[in-house]
Image (cartoon, rainbow, N blue to C red; front, top):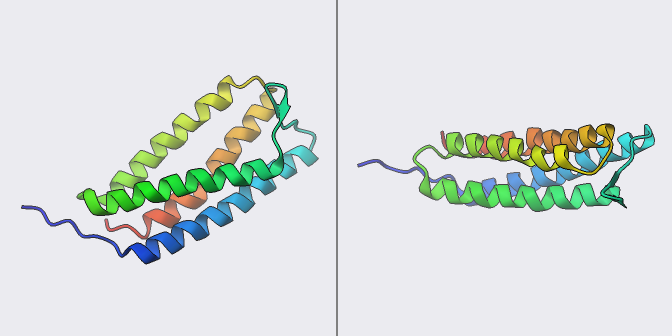
Length: 131
């Protein structure tokens, strides 16, 4: 019989929400810097506002946090399961960027924002999960 160790939810939630806020600011900054450097934020004929990067980062970071909370209660090794799952999901999140109706530079900028958000959020949440 295996024993599942559950991480306390409050530090996980607090750390996850803090990471989401930091990642939102970082992705908005990356997008603004890209736009300042002359990279278009137009995808499919519609401009993406810089604030849109922050909003979507928070939404998907909260989805990741919910995943972590579920794994903390159900997985034998929640940290490993979380890291593996979120790395795969991050890789999959790049596919729409590659296929987007946008310039090559815009596609790279979009992918960079995904990687920046993941680099902030995944470790911040993972370190609060039991190994």
